[in-house]
Length: 275
Image (cartoon, rainbow, N blue to C red; front, side, top):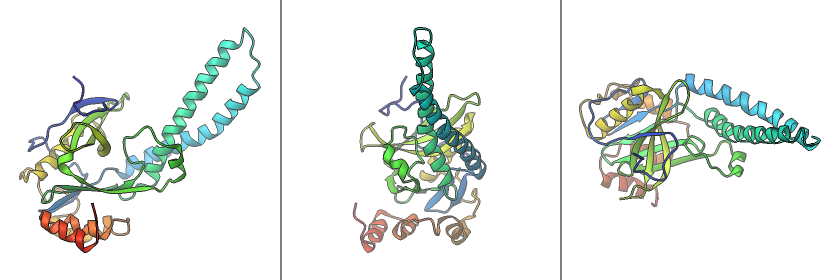
């Protein structure tokens, strides 16, 4: 049975249900939580270093291999005996170009992801906030001109009601799963954006953060406010270490703590934020 969220995402395993869930676990991804909002890290240091090294190695390799192979094809003498070899080399060249096309964004998003790229959930206003590299998403088709802006960021506010969870797998021998938030048009199943929630987990681990977030948003006590790296009374330390100096808009940092839609509207009005 395919996903109800369209267009279908490659590697789809299952759609996830919202609501309180007994299956929960912050698993050291939770940075901070209080009665209004929580913050999850999405990129651990070890993963970031590993994938940065891998993508850098492949990208640099392709920069040397692709021109060399292209030049070789240009001077290649095609005969009836070598015609098949020529076409095989063309296919290999296309594959190498695709690898480079995929590895540059991977390199960018690991190189320019700061402090784990936290995602913020406010259960009092039903808002979700991200401040991340433009390349920190599940998009494949990109305008090549965006590669000229490696430090490009997106800073957005979403409605929790418009976000739906799905799990996909990466087809590797390690069967790693990724939880993705599908941003849907209101009252539809049509997706207009994707947000990585919990990248590259083995097996059931990919469902734990989703469970914790749902319990938190439903004010379920299974989501303990002291489960994070910073305890609830350490909000100042959390914002100093994780939020400060990362380009978060001032109004958005205030909105983390908003306790109602009215208070959020007042914050936006004070900062001249228009929808």
